Length: 115
Image 1 (tube, rainbow, N blue to C red):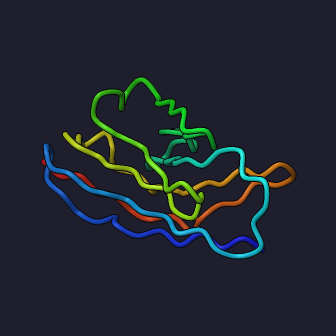
Image 2 (tube, helix red, strand yellow):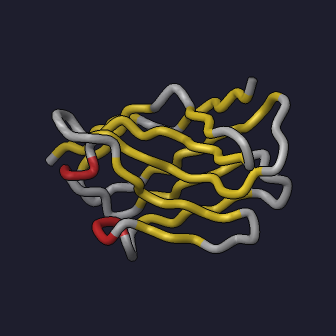
């Protein structure tokens, strides 16, 4: 079983920054992509950012220019640098790892942006 441990969430004022991290452990093989999803209160889970194993990154339109996803070369960690945070960014953020044959999720970390 894959274990994804997230950290870095918390309470921040609008305009501030946070850096989320996710450490991957367990019997992991053939990772094709890693990413971050979020679920705002009362809404469905949505993709925030994704990075493929060869380093190509994609972002949802609402975070382009503000968030940056990165990973280490061994696919052991994935990060999300969040700058210029807005109240609308408030959500539970989930780390995601896609392998060739399965999809794994972290427990989630809460990001709350106040104004």
